[in-house]
Amino acid sequence: MMAAMRGLLSGLVAVSLLVACGQDDSATETSPVVTEAADTEVVAAVDPVEELLDAEGRLPFEAALGLFSTYFTELPDVAAVDVAGDLHESTTVLRVLLADQALLTAAQLAVIEETLGPVGAPLDELLEGAGARAGIARDQFLRDAAAQLREAETFFARELGRSLPFTVRVVALAEVDGAVRRFPAGVLADATLREVDGRSVCSIRLNSTAVKPFLLRETAAHEMFHCFQYAVDDGRGPAWVVEGSAEWAGAKFAGGTSVSDGWAERWVTTPNRAITRRSYDAMGLFVLGEEVGVPMFGYIDRLLATPTIATVRGAVGTELDVQWGLSYAGQGDWGAAYAISTTPFSGSGPARQLIRGRVNAGPAVFPLPPGDRQSGAQAYSLAVEGDVLIVSGNGFGGLRFDNGQELRFAGGFAGDFCLLPEGCVCPDGRNVGGGGRTITAAGSRSLFVGWGPSPDLTPQLEMQTLDQWCTGESALPNNGDPCMVGEWTSTSMTTPAVNGSPALQGGSGILVVFRADSTFSVNFDNMTPLVGEISEKLSVELFYSGATVGTWSVDADGQYVGGGDSSSVRIKSQLDGQVILDSSLAELAGASTSTDTPPGTYRVADCSATALTLTTGSTGGQAAMIFQRTG
Image (cartoon, rainbow, N blue to C red; front, side, top):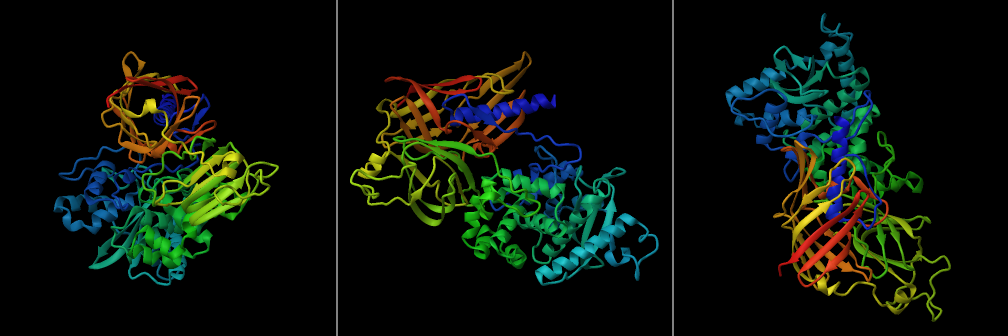
């Protein structure tokens, strides 16, 4: 059953991208949405908390109430929230509730306090030697935990240049204690600021059901770092700051475990996920800062006080965004900037979309940028035709050709790269083009393109023949196909069976406008769902919403290429009424790789005064979209 569901999800992702992005032929691969792992592995997954974060990455109080009712125990007058997945961030939920406990009713606070249980014993009472208390000290698990916590406390006090203003207490509790659920399923530990005799203490709770000996050291360090955070942050900080820095600090102290390995992998494999949608996996940001050469412990307090990405940039500088993009190459053998090598990062990179650049087809189309380009990266492989590649733009990142030639940029950049083995010399014997530009260096027909957070959509990469470059004639399109100019509304759409997804049909109501200046817009908000039957009693539906704008062109062979900002487009799928997929198009595209042609590529099968048919290929057959002219 699970294998069938994984196949269905994989197929739905492939269909979603096929419809929205298109393919020119049948070579499309999609990486699995669901990750399988051996029983001994701990794999990072999307946390329900992340789906409820606000624009700054903070968990709202009302959302914290709902998550507590859903994953701990029901709170009076609070309904459970409709979210999927296991809750990892119990500290986030608890710290938000306790920071605003004045907003809780007495009955709600009583339930939370009962769930939390005892605050625990001071570390000194658990350590061997002077001050050890009989009975407590004999609990080897707690003694080991106290020793690890004390060592972590000493380490962080030295790195941060300050000591804790309150004592730390620790307690080990079973995940479920009689009728009380102390922890959400599988949560290792949490740390909260509580009161004992009118004084604040940092209470660390360890889940004795889930914490294994090999996880204890990093778990203890992670929670101890939360205690240091509470001295600066009031408990309301963004998840990417609070959990990301704690995961980074814990791994730096302990050397990493399978838990931090999982979060590191998530950072590496999701380049275009905005930083404000991250939590534990935001540890990658702090690792990047250190790999650039900035000791990040020295800036943690500043970030806790002013938790914005601008604070990080102020500490690290523009090199942060450059390496943010380049590191997603996952090729450490190219140079230190092209991979993250710090433990627990493996130096690997994400599956990259392959984009093809063609002469007379306009700039290479880099589709589906992240929803927040200010705090997400993009990484692609580019295969180009033509003789000269012209590069320009304004952003942070770089290019690396397969022949080793590089172009890094931090701000405005431009370059003309010769792709001919014999070199690029114009008929007049010079290597100066008609635009007055000279060849920057010798490139190759295959290259990596990576850029970090930037307000610009993409760098501009245009392919030209040598004659075009020498004469200064641009290969950019003029007005596209005049037949397509106008307003169109879809009347039907069909898709083939792909992977585990059945054939789908529906899709009327998409509004598309092709303009003579080679710009277009698409609105999916009135689109009817695509529907397919899995069995006589089971059906699946695929919904699109949102809009996209960009540029388009059609070549002499009837190949339509379009691309632009699809950051607002979302995909939802229901299986017999139950939501099984709900994601932005940008996030789905980040998990896919095209091995032949660029997304945004279709065939104009027919165009007349009243009707337009676009087709695109896949491994299962051909998808078709039929439109009627409405303007």
